[in-house]
Image (cartoon, rainbow, N blue to C red; front, side, top):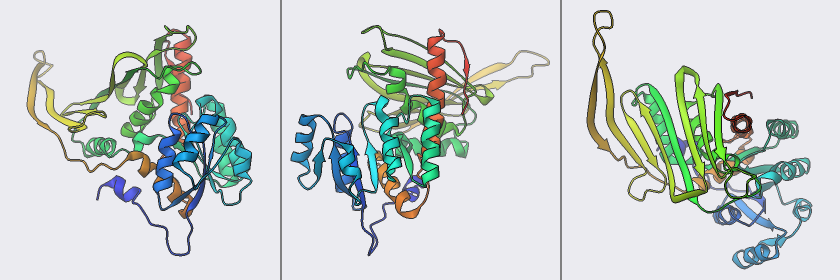
Length: 354
């Protein structure tokens, strides 16, 4: 059993213990995926779907006839059977909805980003702590077995010294006008980078351009500067010719390419590197390129979203911290806020403060 399987092993509801009653807010782009998983889980009971859009409510009512479908969150919060609220609405509404749910004494799962300012993220964290409620953020890639494989390889020293990472998360479509590509797309790769390197960057630089509506950036180039001169470069865009979800990790011994859209193996380990030879006192260094085998490891994949929501319900029942908890969400927001400041200042380096 892998580490992630041990960490969020599916635990059936024990005798005498009822499933966690859940109200889902938002049945637009991502909400249906949450609804499907909650409806299929033995640990959860999807009691409500909340959405102000009549067509979204009609879809939810058709798919889940045993679930109450309402337009206002207040109706769900008034039901004592509802213990947890899952929020899958536009990013700018996350904070207000999470605050309302926490004030009602509910546990909260909120999709990324947790907030769009560090100050709001801190307030949510403090509110959850004061009320003793679970507050979890939807950093779903931290539950991806392929990402766990990479972190285990780094921890084992298989890659040697990690030099740099770079990712491309681009597509043509799902254009947004309320938030830019930094806040909409980059949270995924920021959370992966922090998860893999297990430390925070010291500074962030960011540049981008707003081509479509002139207000929000459609393309963003974000660079995280970690201690030890480790770099992570993130390219995000909804104005690109093809869909790519790829991250490369370059080490002194080996390199890994993680392709999330690949159907024939999401991880490729390259036994490649450059070795330095010679004595700098008596002559210049010589460099030798080493090329070995390419390994495509077998990874037991389960749907990361299911693992994520199982961790949420288990944290509620066991009184434990979920893996992607509010502190994790706050760290990602801290990086994004520094990136936004750098973006507005033409790419000037901005320190990251949590």
